[in-house]
Length: 342
Image 1 (tube, rainbow, N blue to C red):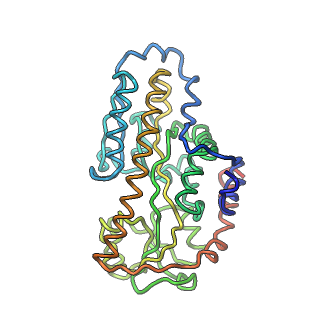
Image 2 (image 1 turned 30 degrees about the vertical axis):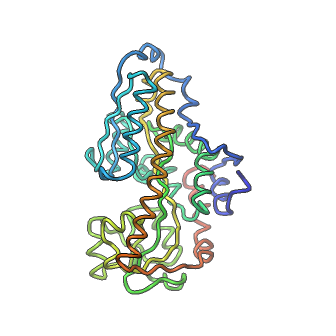
Image 3 (image 1 turned 90 degrees about the vertical axis):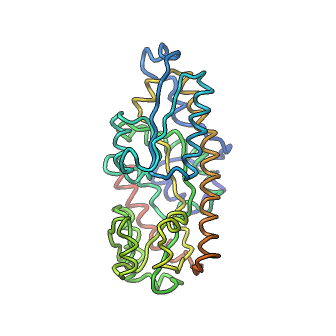
């Protein structure tokens, strides 16, 4: 895979101490590699029916929940009916941070969330907040489905305090929105009041670029844009459309600074309680559901962008990313040192 890697991602690999090589495009999970390490006596549970709960923050219509339906169907099929998966979408089980904490504690079996919500107990989970790790979507696929993705799963299994990663969902690009006019160069970002979700790493990244990050709750962002409390925000196309952020901020700059990574987490306790056969059945089902979730999210984002361009007249602007990338390079080394992975 090394020939496919951009300079910025190589810097991250160096910080993590990971080795790149060609991937086969499959999803061979670290969890699968741990199959032989289940707790003694788990094999006796092979014939017993196990019900697994999975949570996420997306609405019923989101592609994730269609994919989870397939996950449940295939897990039951491949396990001979011994695995039942019950889905709780739309933040039914709490905010993303709450769900991941529940998975860590073992009171929830699985969830799909933004990994940065777990940075309070595992700082390595902030890795994918670093900008420009992935050159494009194909690069995103190659990295996550290759040896680097497997090595990262191993890091989280070791340092995640009770969580494991079965696979990587996501794939939406995040771009910049502005209220007053198009952002055409890094000069336009100097002193730009940018709404960000709470994340120490993201604040450092955008401060290095020259913006003035502002911590505003997601539910208050529309009014903050409309009132001038902030000059803009960064987000994914479907979220921008459903929340109507394009109304106060119709100028889109195609930074594509982040291609989202949303791991499918499982409780280590839950994983180790399954028999080898159940682990293999679950991982096989996850592999199939992952393909569906990724394709669905990709199309979801493309449709949202098309709707906003054609129906709501948003203005899209390209930008030279090189100056932005140059300013954020020092953050990589700092992140490696802070996480002990350099």
